[in-house]
Structures are given as C-alpha cells and as structure tokens.
Length: 250
Image (cartoon, rainbow, N blue to C red; front, top):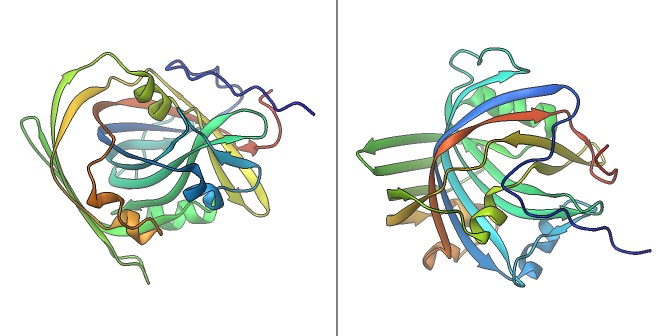
C-alpha cells in the first residue's frame, strides 16, 4: 500500500465541516522552538501518528499565551472560566491519513476548572499552575509555577516583540496546524480547527529559565537558545468535533 499524501503546509486552513464545538481567542502568544531528532520524540506520539519533520528534524515548542473568551459553539465566551493564561509544551505530528497536527505533552493554566474539564472531556494533559503575564510596551513577561499534584516545574520568559515579518516556511510549518492528535478511550482522535493566518512578528528572548519541558521528560533543551522565535498578537479560532485520526477528512 502506498503511503498517504501528506497535506501541504499552508497558512490557510481547510474548510471546517460540520458543527463548531468551541471558539477561542489566542492573544499575546510567543513561539519558542527547539529542533530535535524525530527519534527523540517518536515514542510520545499516539498510535497512528508520527513526528512531522522539516529538513530532517522535528520541533519541541514552548508556547505561552493568553486565552480570552473561550466559549462553546459560536456563543459568547464563558465568564471568568473562559479567560486564563496558558503555557503548552507541544510536538508536531502527522497521522496515517496525511493530516498534520499537534501533540500536546502538557498544557498548564491558572484555572483549576479548565484542568478538570479538559482532562475529563478529551484526556488533554492540562495541569494547574500559578501564572502571570505582564506587558510593558513591547516587552512581555510570562511566569508559571506548577501547582498540579505530583508535578514540579516552573518557567520564566521575557521577550521583546518586534515588527511584523513575512512568514517564513518554518513559521508556517510550526504555526499553520489545523488539528490536534490526542489518545483518548482507546482511540486516537483528530480535533480540527481553523483561524486566519497568523500575524507573526520578530521577537528577541531577553530571559529564559524553563523547567516545564524537563517536567515532561525533555530536559536540557532550555539550556541552549531556541532555534525559532516568534511573537503574535493572536488569532480567533474555531474547533470542530473530534473524529478518528485514522479516517480521512470527509
């Protein structure tokens, strides 16, 4: 049997068919990425999914941002609970049908209710943390310290956001992801999403002291400079209903 054709990397999403399950605003988001050998993270992929690569390497992402007005379907955002801080550690994936996506190793937030709900609904690895975001002009500071039972780790990041840039092929490879892969109840799910093309800005790392990647079994990455840095004021996102990752998009 021939391998499926992997969908092209594009900043424009495929049409989101069917019911919109959830909407979210992602704001003041920083992209930090480290290039790694795909073999390092292959065993972190759910069944039917493998690391996605660009020029022979894959990437580990550390992504802090503000979630604003998350809500069900196309209704208004959930008061208080729908607005929170988040930092995720993530990998880049492609499934047996050729769909590219994201695999989350952790999603840390300051809303305990979000942790409980996301874990119960989809098995997503949310963790409770004390978090802070501060902006002074173009300088953004993100702090996180885990409070989740049995988890240890913290992160301190300071970046200076610059001018908007023309998206590079690497920017698109890392940011133009139109679904996530997640193992839940014996199945590998694919949850589709869509949003406008990311407005990506240059960014300079002023300080970084991270233990969140080490907390999910990837120590040492933060001891070297990231291979990709970017900032975005954000996008509005819609999520579709999850489906089996082994079935092609309808």
